[in-house]
Length: 413
Image (cartoon, rainbow, N blue to C red; front, side):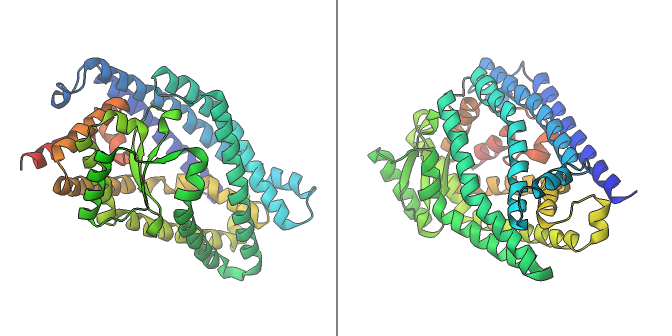
């Protein structure tokens, strides 16, 4: 079996398995649609449970279509010689290899964006609208799209140009220098995102509730967490979903509450949710994930360096000459190559969630955290009965029954 056949088999196998998982999820949730799990029977109505089930099934069906489209696009551009065709056409319009590479990046991004466009429109204005989550207007959606494109051009093109220059000028070890540059870029983004990028999309106002502010500041002092400020984000302008998080790096860290979250939870519940988020900080989960990101990016760039220096492998995979086609090729096949790691990453993330819950139970009321989570399951129409295999492979958070069960035991410990 040659390299091209192996790649074709990988893409088809991963896509088929992921579609199978989405089908299993829809089937399992539908089978448990008519009965609320006993642990939640006094807190979630049958109507809300059925709404969550229908929402999950609708998303699963859209996922199956998206996965099929993703695979067709990846195969058309790689083994179907789409990248080669684009490179040939672009070469006739740009004399500089650097400009040719940037034009190829832009062309592939435009193709992907155009294919994603109908899916995004359907997801926002049909699926989310049907279940009462969408609050985005067509004008707001267009503004977001335009701003996203502008940021991609402002950030992506210089970054792409830097990588192409390094590949051309720094010899066989270019990938190591590219990795160092990538680390510096990510650290910079962590520092500037809260104050420079996030406000382009949402409005952040200082937390005005004095009672809540006092409770939150007291909790942060107890946990040894310093934040640059407490802010409320106007998430309700686009969606009815709610959340809370902290963002930033060093002294630019911010605690952010969605306005939808503040509107649905009591002060004790908000405090417990924040204690959970602070648990990720205290247990160094964020730092661990950053380190993993850097190690993974090193491995990917080393792989790029290996493929780029192997003419036989490039020829077997029909990768067009030049650095930019190589980067595009690897970016398209990488999700399929990395999929076998998905269950491990999900399990690691769920372990972090349990650790953050345990931390929250030490610094806030675990019953309040359980109550807040039940409200969030209800408000976000999260399924209480996910398929076990789908959940084990994909879910970054523990299933509702398991998570609430642990919190109930902590409450009565």
